[in-house]
Image 1 (cartoon, rainbow, N blue to C red):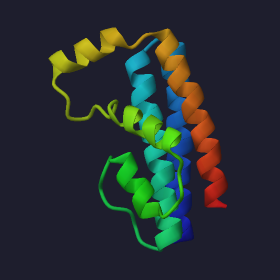
Image 2: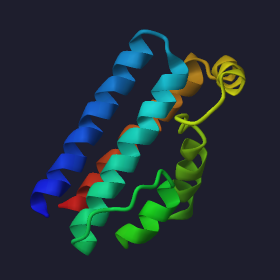
Image 3: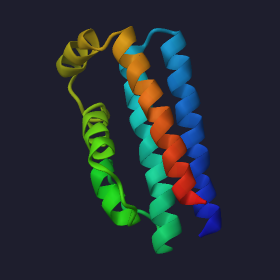
Length: 127
């Protein structure tokens, strides 16, 4: 299981670095998407670590918190709920265009900062 935990943790690191790259290239919607992915994969590392089972195929961050068996406060849950909105794999082009217009540099910067803080906190739970 340790190998699987490292697998998820490494993917999370890759995703947060991708969020940085997307921010620099001003692709703000994709900053939020890769922030969601980074959190999702850290939560999957926690699920794997804490349950000794491979996590389910889900993108529901609050469900992954539940499965990971960690205690999390309401403010963090609220952030996860907002971040979950930016999982975009199955969205239609018109919807993506609309959301993309609503996400600006300030919003992307805020989500990136909050994601980094949450990742730091989650990684402490992983050790």
